[in-house]
Length: 253
Image 1 (cartoon, rainbow, N blue to C red):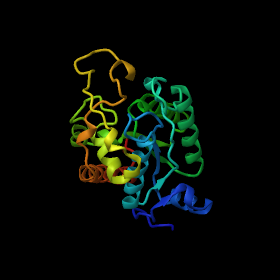
Image 2: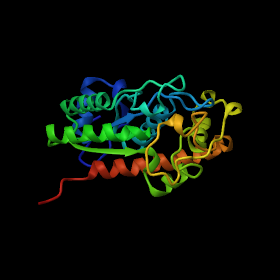
Image 3: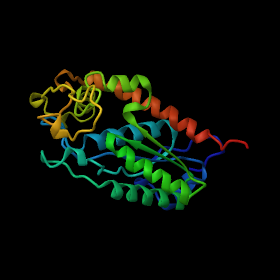
């Protein structure tokens, strides 16, 4: 499994390999990739694990290209904005999520990894994950972290995601990708379209204040074909980022 400098190792999932193989992967320069998602209401038509499924799939598919190591996905995120208006949401508080990500980062570092990429599938995971990065950078000066959300990997991807709703949730993009990846987790006949009522507003609102169904966007227009195309874009963009991160060295100062 060990590889020469600059070469990619066999793609692996952290939970599927041995302790020696984890160490060899770290020694080869592989990145540790942590998918973070959420378990939350996604309207009447999508599974509650949508964000975790998407983050984990994109991270895993990209690692198949680059040979990096994907940590077990974090299935709970910071979903407080959904409140308890609808059943299905399981949320961490921001401080709790920050602590969990810090702990995972510490242990990845203890196994020899010096580069950590957090691949996010849920919008409001950003603040706690970024807080975790601040703490990890302070505690572990040799660690080089990066946080990236799958929905804004590139400007083109961000535009595609937000085509039907700037502040999207369970929209056409997410529904299309689930139709392609896990059709059994979609109930197309129950899809409800709702406009983005946050457009041009300057304040922040919890979900019950802006949607009746828990949906923001037009999932009724989704298709598996469209989802496959978008997923291909996501995997390609993340693969490029991981390749660059793997080869990147500290600035020469």
